Length: 106
Image (tube, rainbow, N blue to C red; front, side, top):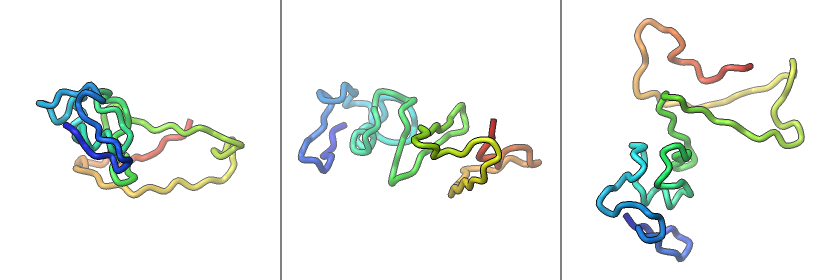
């Protein structure tokens, strides 16, 4: 449950409060505690975004992403905008529905 964070600091269980006998203390099922510490996530908080290699893992169970809006970064009203995403679904529901929906405005 310890990891060298490439900052010259070794993060161990005494630094993070994690259980050295449990590789995934927060139970998010995505990253090990060491990987979460290395990426800046809280290994004790299952709601802290799991970020690996610059990607977010969303399991489809109440997950969402919000962004701040500095100086009008996010458009409003009828302003044109583009959303781009690379997605890798683990399964695709049969019969369509909104299983492929990645955004909703409003």
